[in-house]
Length: 198
Image (cartoon, rainbow, N blue to C red; front, side, top):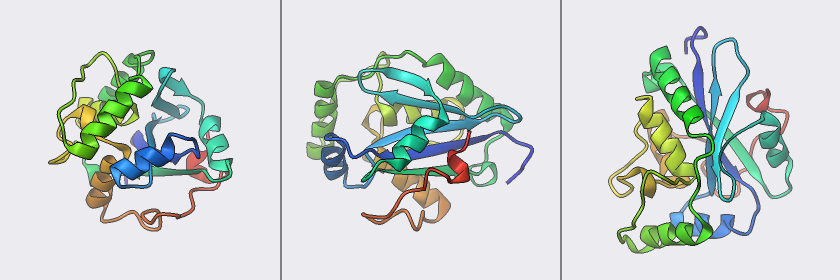
């Protein structure tokens, strides 16, 4: 990986909240939440995520460290190596600008998220649009906006239908696996992990 290039990281989180279990069960995975961490060359990290009830926000890295410290919670940061994902500084800047532009964008309500989960469960169509987002849709749209990586797959073939776990599987395929994080019950990163530093 070039050390003279800005980097994008994708974080995955299991927050031990009531809604995490149902999302994991329906999406056949271990991650109910996802977001992005931008590392602009020579500048502080910028964490971008879509949170139900709050919208798309820019949060400090301390939020992830706190979540990594929650009993029963887990956080994993996956660096997207520019050499593996074949992106340039221009790609990075396009994605970064898009994430910043999305700040304040409204998220789907819990009811609408249930509709999305129903679409995942029964493979039914769902009515969505560009005016709202969820965590995985925000990540998918942002990476596509920068031309960094297409997180969609055959079944999750629109931005809105991607899930944290479908994106996890796409990234794992690209990287040749994500051991030791791929098994149910695997521990997350400790709050002191350098990837969670400011």
